[in-house]
Image (cartoon, rainbow, N blue to C red; front, side, top):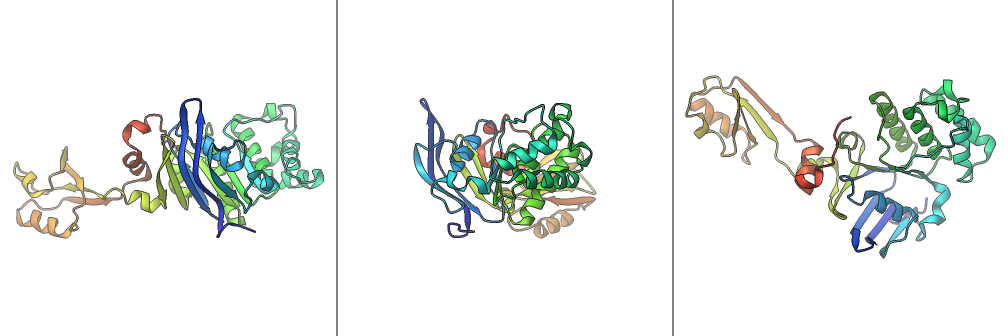
Amino acid sequence: MDLNNGLAIAANGLVKRFGDRRVVDGIDIAVPAGTIYGVLGPNGAGKTTTLRMLLGIIEPDTGDRVLLGCAHPRDAGDRVGYLPEERGLYPAMKARDAIAFMGALRGLDWKTGRARAVELMQGAGLGHATDTKIRKLSKGMAQLVQLLGSVVHRPDLLVLDEPFSGLDPVNQERLEAMILAERDRGATILLSTHVMAHAQRLCDRLAIIAGGKRRFEGTVDEARATLPDRVQYRPRHADADIGASLPPDAVRDGGEWRFALPAGGIEPLLVRLIDAGHGIAGLSIDRPGLHEAFVRIVGEQATAPLGDAA
């Protein structure tokens, strides 16, 4: 695969305006080949516009991008699978034929597409619905069919825009398994989502976008490390003076106290608490999740539309 320095996608300084509004404001993206790369952000952050510029669906006002080694993204069209945020299948078409049709649009011959469609549907637990018309499928099943149509030609790059939207937990789990299988096959996955739970489980690297700007780029662990670990402490012998022994940010919650892990570690604090006679009835140290890190990085106001149910 002819890539730009080991990158499936490289973009620099992408800018896109719609009227007076700058929807994407100087975004850089570098997606290593063979990884699952997340583009995260609240609704309206500029994620979909960024994906469409990377794919060559729309042109940036300024900036450049290279996709699968091609300076003109559409030149790599047959090597890309794309699941747009706006779903669309022909309702009168059978599921197997819908998948084969999407493959044919990417250069796959019809006979091979129909054969692969059966294999893919069986692997996704939809083998019973190969000859079912799209209009008779549930929303979740139809969405999985459209995803299968985006991978039937075995693309080098798979771009998924909010793929979990509207799926029930069972189909979300199936979709996660399918994404991991594509990565294991060797494909690069570019995943846009505003649901942090999926990103935390799936992504090797990610970019966080808010207000049209890239606010963070790195691994999930690096994002979570922008916040300190949190301590939950329950004293054995609580009294009115215990607050003086705890860090200044300590907050009482019933019989427990919560605070950020001190920079010097937990051991000096435990010695102080024991020496002061408070004892330790319970202690846990929890690492912040990606959702908390997201709030810290982009600000609570930007996360107002954010969903985190999975």
